[in-house]
Image (cartoon, rainbow, N blue to C red):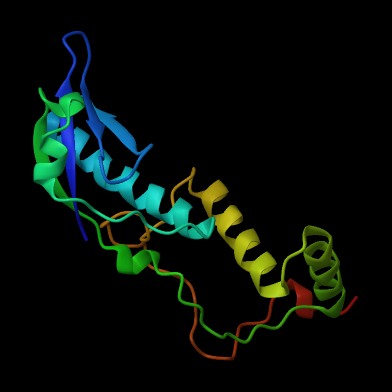
Length: 166
């Protein structure tokens, strides 16, 4: 999906970016290139936030409509492409194995928060990944490739500490 952005240069600082089609979506950079790249990440983060909150993605207007806005008069226009398919809210059925006591804890926490088990686990996983990745979701919010994963697609797994009997 392509989004028009408007870039303003402040005399004493770097470049500021506004995304007219996404109210509240702003970015900045020390150089024009950095500002445009930061805008791509800001757009992806903004859209992901909307999807996570169950909000619709606002309709995009023609760039000519935005160019008529007095707030953007002195700005430089650019178009930023963001692959929103990576941000899809499509759900997939998976099969996982966890200890019964952990499942009980998860179910109790989900009920307390008024969530489904799946919704609770998905949010917990995203929160964990964001904490470990300093706020970014690798491979989802950027065009950079993900680091290789240790995920195995086989249902077999190597024995771990939880398999040892005491």
